[in-house]
Image 1 (cartoon, rainbow over the protein chains, first blue to last red):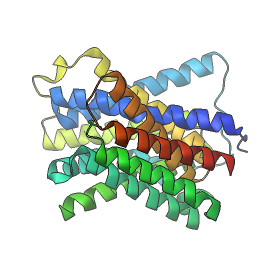
Image 2: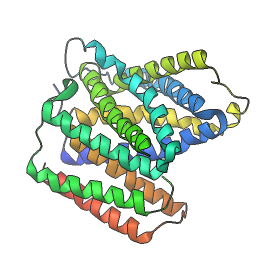
Image 3: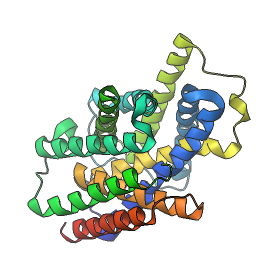
Image 4: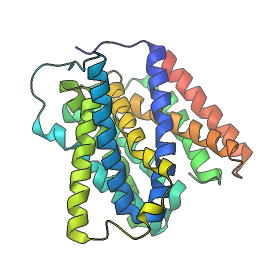
Length: 159
Length: 140
């Protein structure tokens, strides 16, 4: 079973996790500037693999076992998430170079993420439960998407 | 340009697919184990790509500063955190909250680094995002 979390914990994890892509992009593009995009992605996945292994060992060492929420075996396709990560690096960097620039690429990609999220919740895609959209969520979604577009498209800072 | 838009849109969809797939794996293993497998497969595929195409190591590759290698470990936390979230709230709510965190921290970082930009756009955008997060949070 999934242990439910309080609203505050959810918000804290979400905003904290959301900060990471900004730093990741900054570090990974620094790697790419020195060794190219392929090396940057390879190094990021390589150091990530080592870091994840170390975190798992430390957690096991202090007795904080990783208990699976659900007994049984995951479907085979669930192990293939790493494929999309590798392909994604190539797609997004090509889009940046093909004329959309960084902000434009992020704005369009954001729309893609949101559309997929809506479809995933509507039909319960890829193994997670259906969570049909309630009308009360339309306003917050609209505000977040429009606010993001305003920053991405009208603030000339590099992101 | 149409090609670039199609690529960027596909990239966004892939981010969503990745979150959903790793979330399902986290359901049977744990968010951190799912993140480990995601990165292990990624480095394996990229190694194969490097062997097939070449050009993985350029002479200047090792001149990057040490801290640039922290992007990967942060990515582990990102995938694990996203998987933890999507098991508890909907895909749309996860996406919206993550995007909010991303843009809020991005603007904060730009202000700290004194990157020039439009104060009007920053204030308007941040106000809209915060209002959206508060509304989404309250009505859950």
